[in-house]
Amino acid sequence: SREVRLKSRPVGMPQAGDFEVGSVELASPGEGQVLVRNRWMSVDPYMRGRMYDRPSYVPPFQVGKPLEGGAVGEVVASGSPDFKPGDLVMSMLGWREGFVAPANTLEKLPADAGVPVEAFLGILGMPGLTAYAGLLEIGQPKEGDTVFVSGGAGAVGSIVAQIAKIKGCTVVATAGSDEKCAWLKSVGVDHAINYKKGNLLEAVRAAAPKGIDVYFDNVGGEHLEVALELAKPFARFAECGMIAQYNNEEPAPGPRNLIYVVGKSLKIQGFIVTQFAGLRPQFIKDMSGWIAGGKLKWEQTVETGVDNAAGAFLKLFSGGNTGKMLVKL
Ligand code: NDP
Image (cartoon, rainbow, N blue to C red):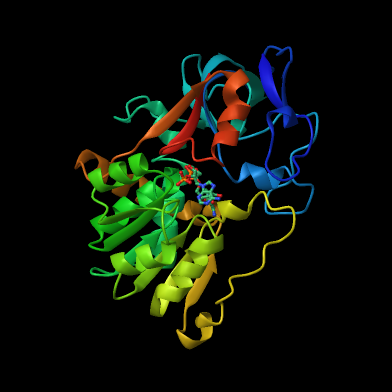
Protein backbone atom coordinates (compact mmCIF):
# COMPACT_ATOMS: atom_id res chain seq x y z
CA SER A 1 0.00 0.00 0.00
CA ARG A 2 1.39 3.40 -0.94
CA GLU A 3 1.33 6.48 1.29
CA VAL A 4 2.33 10.14 1.18
CA ARG A 5 5.02 11.11 3.68
CA LEU A 6 6.38 14.42 4.87
CA LYS A 7 9.94 14.47 3.55
CA SER A 8 10.95 17.83 5.01
CA ARG A 9 9.24 20.62 6.89
CA PRO A 10 8.27 23.30 4.35
CA VAL A 11 9.80 26.72 4.75
CA GLY A 12 7.40 29.33 3.43
CA MET A 13 5.29 28.08 0.54
CA PRO A 14 5.35 24.24 0.54
CA GLN A 15 7.08 22.61 -2.44
CA ALA A 16 6.51 19.26 -4.15
CA GLY A 17 9.91 18.12 -2.83
CA ASP A 18 8.66 18.42 0.76
CA PHE A 19 6.61 15.26 0.17
CA GLU A 20 7.39 11.73 -1.00
CA VAL A 21 5.43 8.60 -1.77
CA GLY A 22 6.52 5.36 -0.09
CA SER A 23 5.17 1.84 0.32
CA VAL A 24 4.31 -0.33 3.30
CA GLU A 25 3.12 -3.90 3.63
CA LEU A 26 -0.27 -4.19 5.29
CA ALA A 27 -0.73 -7.14 7.68
CA SER A 28 -4.06 -8.95 7.92
CA PRO A 29 -6.28 -7.47 10.58
CA GLY A 30 -5.97 -9.00 14.05
CA GLU A 31 -8.79 -9.29 16.53
CA GLY A 32 -10.64 -5.99 16.85
CA GLN A 33 -8.86 -4.58 13.77
CA VAL A 34 -10.08 -3.71 10.30
CA LEU A 35 -8.29 -3.58 6.93
CA VAL A 36 -9.53 -0.64 4.85
CA ARG A 37 -8.95 0.37 1.23
CA ASN A 38 -9.26 4.15 1.00
CA ARG A 39 -11.49 5.53 -1.78
CA TRP A 40 -11.43 9.30 -1.10
CA MET A 41 -9.22 11.55 0.96
CA SER A 42 -9.64 15.11 2.09
CA VAL A 43 -7.04 17.78 1.35
CA ASP A 44 -7.15 20.62 3.88
CA PRO A 45 -5.42 23.95 4.50
CA TYR A 46 -5.09 23.29 8.26
CA MET A 47 -2.55 20.57 7.44
CA ARG A 48 -0.04 23.33 6.73
CA GLY A 49 -0.07 24.13 10.46
CA ARG A 50 0.78 20.52 11.30
CA MET A 51 3.90 20.76 9.15
CA TYR A 52 5.51 23.19 11.61
CA ASP A 53 7.21 21.62 14.61
CA ARG A 54 5.36 23.51 17.30
CA PRO A 55 2.67 22.80 19.90
CA SER A 56 -0.87 23.32 18.60
CA TYR A 57 -4.37 21.92 18.95
CA VAL A 58 -3.22 18.90 16.90
CA PRO A 59 0.28 17.39 17.13
CA PRO A 60 2.74 18.15 14.31
CA PHE A 61 3.33 15.69 11.47
CA GLN A 62 6.62 13.81 11.76
CA VAL A 63 9.23 13.89 9.01
CA GLY A 64 9.44 10.48 7.31
CA LYS A 65 5.97 9.51 8.50
CA PRO A 66 2.74 9.53 6.48
CA LEU A 67 0.47 12.55 6.58
CA GLU A 68 -2.99 12.18 8.09
CA GLY A 69 -6.38 13.51 7.18
CA GLY A 70 -10.01 12.63 6.76
CA ALA A 71 -10.74 9.71 4.43
CA VAL A 72 -13.57 7.53 3.26
CA GLY A 73 -12.71 3.90 2.59
CA GLU A 74 -14.14 0.46 2.14
CA VAL A 75 -13.60 -2.41 4.56
CA VAL A 76 -11.68 -5.22 2.87
CA ALA A 77 -11.25 -7.61 5.82
CA SER A 78 -12.43 -7.37 9.39
CA GLY A 79 -11.45 -8.87 12.72
CA SER A 80 -14.27 -6.96 14.39
CA PRO A 81 -17.93 -7.96 14.69
CA ASP A 82 -18.85 -4.30 14.05
CA PHE A 83 -17.56 -4.19 10.45
CA LYS A 84 -17.84 -6.44 7.41
CA PRO A 85 -16.20 -6.28 3.99
CA GLY A 86 -17.89 -3.68 1.81
CA ASP A 87 -18.80 -1.36 4.70
CA LEU A 88 -17.96 2.28 4.03
CA VAL A 89 -15.99 3.92 6.82
CA MET A 90 -14.68 7.34 7.73
CA SER A 91 -11.26 7.62 9.35
CA MET A 92 -8.47 10.12 9.96
CA LEU A 93 -6.08 7.82 8.06
CA GLY A 94 -6.07 9.44 4.66
CA TRP A 95 -2.92 10.12 2.56
CA ARG A 96 -2.50 6.34 2.07
CA GLU A 97 -4.14 3.76 -0.12
CA GLY A 98 -5.00 1.45 2.74
CA PHE A 99 -4.45 0.72 6.41
CA VAL A 100 -5.11 -1.64 9.31
CA ALA A 101 -6.58 0.11 12.35
CA PRO A 102 -8.56 -0.64 15.50
CA ALA A 103 -12.28 -0.82 14.74
CA ASN A 104 -13.04 1.81 17.35
CA THR A 105 -11.14 4.46 15.38
CA LEU A 106 -13.55 4.11 12.45
CA GLU A 107 -17.00 5.50 11.87
CA LYS A 108 -19.42 3.55 9.69
CA LEU A 109 -21.08 5.63 6.98
CA PRO A 110 -24.64 5.11 5.83
CA ALA A 111 -24.79 3.24 2.51
CA ASP A 112 -27.98 5.06 1.47
CA ALA A 113 -27.39 8.69 2.45
CA GLY A 114 -28.73 10.01 -0.85
CA VAL A 115 -25.48 11.89 -1.53
CA PRO A 116 -22.20 10.66 -3.06
CA VAL A 117 -20.09 9.16 -0.29
CA GLU A 118 -17.36 11.80 -0.65
CA ALA A 119 -19.87 14.39 0.57
CA PHE A 120 -18.97 13.15 4.06
CA LEU A 121 -15.58 14.80 3.54
CA GLY A 122 -17.18 18.04 2.36
CA ILE A 123 -20.66 19.40 2.70
CA LEU A 124 -21.81 16.78 5.22
CA GLY A 125 -18.40 16.47 6.86
CA MET A 126 -15.79 18.59 8.58
CA PRO A 127 -15.92 21.63 6.23
CA GLY A 128 -19.72 21.62 6.31
CA LEU A 129 -19.82 21.58 10.09
CA THR A 130 -17.17 24.30 10.20
CA ALA A 131 -19.37 26.53 8.04
CA TYR A 132 -22.59 25.69 9.87
CA ALA A 133 -21.27 26.04 13.40
CA GLY A 134 -18.99 29.01 12.76
CA LEU A 135 -21.66 31.01 10.98
CA LEU A 136 -24.66 30.16 13.14
CA GLU A 137 -23.08 29.85 16.59
CA ILE A 138 -20.44 32.55 16.37
CA GLY A 139 -21.71 34.79 13.57
CA GLN A 140 -25.29 34.75 14.91
CA PRO A 141 -26.74 36.05 11.62
CA LYS A 142 -30.20 37.58 11.73
CA GLU A 143 -32.57 38.05 8.84
CA GLY A 144 -31.61 41.16 6.89
CA ASP A 145 -28.01 41.12 8.10
CA THR A 146 -25.15 41.60 5.70
CA VAL A 147 -22.70 38.70 5.88
CA PHE A 148 -19.22 39.03 4.40
CA VAL A 149 -17.30 35.81 3.76
CA SER A 150 -13.76 35.52 2.42
CA GLY A 151 -12.55 32.38 0.63
CA GLY A 152 -16.12 32.31 -0.61
CA ALA A 153 -15.69 29.69 -3.34
CA GLY A 154 -13.89 27.20 -1.11
CA ALA A 155 -15.24 24.18 0.74
CA VAL A 156 -16.15 26.11 3.89
CA GLY A 157 -16.82 29.54 2.39
CA SER A 158 -19.28 28.36 -0.25
CA ILE A 159 -21.38 26.66 2.41
CA VAL A 160 -21.22 29.70 4.69
CA ALA A 161 -22.47 31.87 1.83
CA GLN A 162 -25.42 29.62 1.09
CA ILE A 163 -26.46 29.06 4.71
CA ALA A 164 -26.39 32.84 5.16
CA LYS A 165 -28.76 33.14 2.17
CA ILE A 166 -31.04 30.49 3.70
CA LYS A 167 -31.11 32.62 6.87
CA GLY A 168 -32.29 35.64 4.89
CA CYS A 169 -29.05 37.61 4.81
CA THR A 170 -27.42 39.67 2.08
CA VAL A 171 -24.17 37.91 1.21
CA VAL A 172 -20.93 39.45 0.00
CA ALA A 173 -18.29 36.86 -0.86
CA THR A 174 -14.75 37.09 -2.23
CA ALA A 175 -12.94 34.58 -4.42
CA GLY A 176 -9.80 34.54 -6.55
CA SER A 177 -11.21 34.29 -10.08
CA ASP A 178 -14.10 35.47 -12.25
CA GLU A 179 -15.16 31.84 -12.79
CA LYS A 180 -15.44 31.29 -9.05
CA CYS A 181 -17.43 34.52 -8.71
CA ALA A 182 -19.80 33.43 -11.48
CA TRP A 183 -20.40 30.15 -9.67
CA LEU A 184 -21.11 32.01 -6.42
CA LYS A 185 -23.65 34.22 -8.20
CA SER A 186 -25.27 31.10 -9.65
CA VAL A 187 -25.88 29.73 -6.14
CA GLY A 188 -27.49 32.95 -4.95
CA VAL A 189 -24.66 35.05 -3.55
CA ASP A 190 -25.67 38.71 -3.85
CA HIS A 191 -22.21 40.19 -4.46
CA ALA A 192 -19.24 38.08 -5.54
CA ILE A 193 -15.95 39.97 -5.67
CA ASN A 194 -12.75 38.82 -7.37
CA TYR A 195 -10.27 40.04 -4.76
CA LYS A 196 -7.38 39.79 -7.21
CA LYS A 197 -8.83 42.66 -9.26
CA GLY A 198 -9.06 46.27 -8.17
CA ASN A 199 -9.37 47.71 -4.69
CA LEU A 200 -10.81 45.21 -2.23
CA LEU A 201 -11.94 47.75 0.35
CA GLU A 202 -13.81 49.84 -2.22
CA ALA A 203 -15.38 46.77 -3.85
CA VAL A 204 -16.70 45.45 -0.54
CA ARG A 205 -17.83 48.93 0.52
CA ALA A 206 -19.80 49.27 -2.72
CA ALA A 207 -21.41 45.85 -2.14
CA ALA A 208 -22.21 46.59 1.51
CA PRO A 209 -22.81 50.36 1.67
CA LYS A 210 -24.41 50.12 5.12
CA GLY A 211 -21.59 47.98 6.50
CA ILE A 212 -21.36 44.37 7.57
CA ASP A 213 -22.98 42.59 10.50
CA VAL A 214 -21.08 39.31 10.27
CA TYR A 215 -17.62 38.54 8.91
CA PHE A 216 -16.69 34.89 8.36
CA ASP A 217 -12.91 34.92 7.98
CA ASN A 218 -11.13 32.20 6.01
CA VAL A 219 -8.28 34.36 4.80
CA GLY A 220 -6.98 36.93 7.34
CA GLY A 221 -4.58 39.61 6.07
CA GLU A 222 -6.07 42.38 3.96
CA HIS A 223 -9.55 40.81 4.08
CA LEU A 224 -9.60 41.11 7.86
CA GLU A 225 -8.60 44.76 7.70
CA VAL A 226 -11.39 45.41 5.20
CA ALA A 227 -13.89 43.68 7.47
CA LEU A 228 -12.75 45.74 10.47
CA GLU A 229 -13.06 48.90 8.42
CA LEU A 230 -16.59 48.12 7.22
CA ALA A 231 -17.97 46.43 10.34
CA LYS A 232 -21.09 47.91 11.88
CA PRO A 233 -21.15 48.43 15.63
CA PHE A 234 -21.59 45.08 17.44
CA ALA A 235 -20.64 43.06 14.33
CA ARG A 236 -19.57 39.46 14.92
CA PHE A 237 -16.37 38.00 13.44
CA ALA A 238 -16.13 34.22 13.15
CA GLU A 239 -12.37 33.61 12.85
CA CYS A 240 -12.22 30.30 11.03
CA GLY A 241 -8.89 30.52 9.22
CA MET A 242 -6.24 32.85 7.82
CA ILE A 243 -4.92 31.02 4.78
CA ALA A 244 -3.20 34.16 3.45
CA GLN A 245 -0.81 33.87 6.40
CA TYR A 246 -0.16 30.11 6.69
CA ASN A 247 3.09 30.23 4.73
CA ASN A 248 4.53 33.36 6.32
CA GLU A 249 8.06 32.82 7.51
CA GLU A 250 7.65 35.58 10.10
CA PRO A 251 4.38 36.43 11.89
CA ALA A 252 2.58 39.09 9.84
CA PRO A 253 1.84 42.38 11.58
CA GLY A 254 -1.65 42.44 13.03
CA PRO A 255 -4.48 44.30 11.30
CA ARG A 256 -3.43 47.94 11.32
CA ASN A 257 -6.96 49.00 12.21
CA LEU A 258 -7.60 46.58 15.05
CA ILE A 259 -8.50 49.62 17.14
CA TYR A 260 -12.01 49.44 15.63
CA VAL A 261 -12.69 46.50 17.94
CA VAL A 262 -13.04 48.96 20.78
CA GLY A 263 -15.03 51.77 19.25
CA LYS A 264 -17.38 49.50 17.31
CA SER A 265 -17.73 47.00 20.17
CA LEU A 266 -16.88 44.12 17.87
CA LYS A 267 -17.04 40.51 18.97
CA ILE A 268 -14.19 38.53 17.42
CA GLN A 269 -14.05 34.83 18.18
CA GLY A 270 -11.90 32.07 16.77
CA PHE A 271 -12.97 28.43 16.86
CA ILE A 272 -11.96 24.90 15.96
CA VAL A 273 -14.66 22.74 14.40
CA THR A 274 -14.14 19.85 16.83
CA GLN A 275 -15.48 22.11 19.58
CA PHE A 276 -18.88 21.83 17.89
CA ALA A 277 -19.04 18.03 17.59
CA GLY A 278 -22.19 18.12 19.69
CA LEU A 279 -24.01 19.95 16.89
CA ARG A 280 -23.55 17.11 14.43
CA PRO A 281 -27.03 15.55 14.65
CA GLN A 282 -28.69 18.95 14.12
CA PHE A 283 -26.17 19.82 11.40
CA ILE A 284 -26.86 16.60 9.46
CA LYS A 285 -30.61 17.11 9.82
CA ASP A 286 -30.57 20.75 8.67
CA MET A 287 -28.08 20.23 5.87
CA SER A 288 -29.86 17.14 4.51
CA GLY A 289 -33.10 19.11 4.45
CA TRP A 290 -31.52 22.05 2.63
CA ILE A 291 -29.81 19.74 0.13
CA ALA A 292 -33.04 17.86 -0.53
CA GLY A 293 -34.84 21.19 -0.94
CA GLY A 294 -32.31 22.35 -3.54
CA LYS A 295 -31.11 25.21 -1.31
CA LEU A 296 -27.53 24.02 -0.92
CA LYS A 297 -25.23 23.22 -3.82
CA TRP A 298 -21.63 22.14 -3.72
CA GLU A 299 -18.63 21.78 -5.95
CA GLN A 300 -15.58 19.60 -5.62
CA THR A 301 -12.21 19.51 -7.31
CA VAL A 302 -10.86 16.00 -7.68
CA GLU A 303 -7.29 14.84 -8.25
CA THR A 304 -6.53 11.16 -8.68
CA GLY A 305 -4.10 8.88 -6.86
CA VAL A 306 -1.54 9.28 -4.06
CA ASP A 307 0.99 10.56 -6.59
CA ASN A 308 -1.14 13.67 -7.09
CA ALA A 309 -2.07 14.23 -3.44
CA ALA A 310 0.78 16.58 -2.57
CA GLY A 311 0.06 18.59 -5.71
CA ALA A 312 -3.58 18.88 -4.65
CA PHE A 313 -2.43 20.28 -1.31
CA LEU A 314 -0.19 22.85 -3.00
CA LYS A 315 -3.10 23.97 -5.17
CA LEU A 316 -5.00 25.13 -2.08
CA PHE A 317 -2.56 28.01 -1.82
CA SER A 318 -2.91 29.08 -5.44
CA GLY A 319 -6.70 28.75 -5.58
CA GLY A 320 -6.62 25.63 -7.78
CA ASN A 321 -9.81 24.31 -6.20
CA THR A 322 -13.44 25.32 -6.40
CA GLY A 323 -15.34 23.87 -3.47
CA LYS A 324 -13.90 20.89 -1.67
CA MET A 325 -10.44 19.62 -2.69
CA LEU A 326 -10.42 15.82 -2.78
CA VAL A 327 -8.18 13.01 -3.96
CA LYS A 328 -9.83 9.90 -5.38
CA LEU A 329 -7.77 6.85 -4.57
P1 NDP B 1 -10.74 26.10 0.59
O1 NDP B 1 -11.57 25.10 -0.13
O2 NDP B 1 -11.33 27.45 0.85
O3 NDP B 1 -9.36 26.20 -0.18
C1 NDP B 1 -8.46 27.23 0.08
C2 NDP B 1 -8.78 28.48 -0.76
O4 NDP B 1 -8.18 29.60 -0.16
C3 NDP B 1 -8.22 28.44 -2.16
O5 NDP B 1 -9.07 27.79 -3.05
C4 NDP B 1 -8.00 29.91 -2.48
O6 NDP B 1 -9.13 30.39 -3.20
C5 NDP B 1 -7.97 30.59 -1.12
N1 NDP B 1 -6.67 31.22 -0.87
C6 NDP B 1 -5.46 30.63 -0.89
N2 NDP B 1 -4.50 31.52 -0.61
C7 NDP B 1 -5.12 32.72 -0.43
C8 NDP B 1 -4.67 34.04 -0.13
N3 NDP B 1 -3.36 34.31 0.05
N4 NDP B 1 -5.59 35.03 -0.03
C9 NDP B 1 -6.90 34.75 -0.19
N5 NDP B 1 -7.40 33.53 -0.49
C10 NDP B 1 -6.50 32.53 -0.60
O7 NDP B 1 -10.32 25.49 1.99
P2 NDP B 1 -11.29 25.11 3.18
O8 NDP B 1 -12.67 25.51 2.84
O9 NDP B 1 -11.02 23.72 3.57
O10 NDP B 1 -10.75 26.05 4.35
C11 NDP B 1 -11.05 27.44 4.34
C12 NDP B 1 -10.46 28.08 5.58
O11 NDP B 1 -11.06 27.52 6.74
C13 NDP B 1 -8.97 27.87 5.76
O12 NDP B 1 -8.42 29.04 6.31
C14 NDP B 1 -8.90 26.73 6.74
O13 NDP B 1 -7.71 26.70 7.44
C15 NDP B 1 -10.08 27.05 7.62
N6 NDP B 1 -10.64 25.94 8.35
C16 NDP B 1 -10.80 26.08 9.69
C17 NDP B 1 -11.39 25.11 10.45
C18 NDP B 1 -11.57 25.34 11.90
O14 NDP B 1 -11.95 24.43 12.62
N7 NDP B 1 -11.33 26.55 12.39
C19 NDP B 1 -11.83 23.85 9.85
C20 NDP B 1 -11.69 23.80 8.40
C21 NDP B 1 -11.09 24.82 7.69
P3 NDP B 1 -9.10 31.74 -4.10
O15 NDP B 1 -9.08 31.29 -5.52
O16 NDP B 1 -10.37 32.40 -3.72
O17 NDP B 1 -7.88 32.49 -3.71
